[in-house]
Image 1 (spheres, one colour):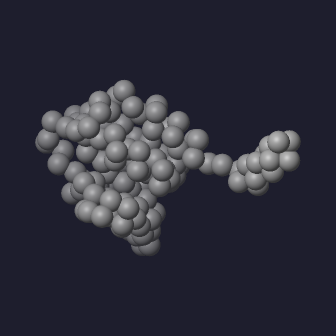
Image 2: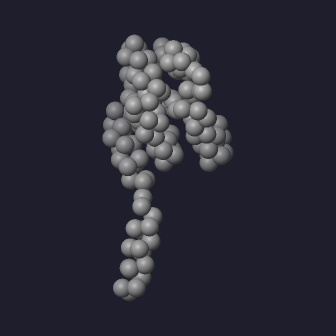
Image 3: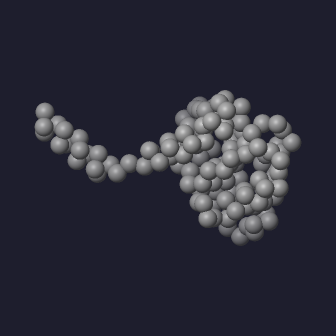
Length: 140
């Protein structure tokens, strides 16, 4: 089982946590931290360091909101200074967080690409889907 850490700007990480709690009906087993208004990179790195058991032998999946943002850069800094086997995915969405959570008993190195695919497939142009559906119904 791998650990999950969600890091975002503002209250988004806590929002993912609360939404997972609402969906699961239980407290999800992942940690989160956020870059709050006025936080320095050093403060965020301290939050990250305190959010994970860096000495445990379990792998770590870190999910961040924006690739070029401070949460991602701070995560990279922390991960590079750690010996913990970890993977970092940027550009998270609720479907990605849900899939990562559902798959946490799998081998992390085997599912990272699947998680990225899930995130890509969850972005849908609904207008095109509605037009396609309407055309299919009319063709029948």
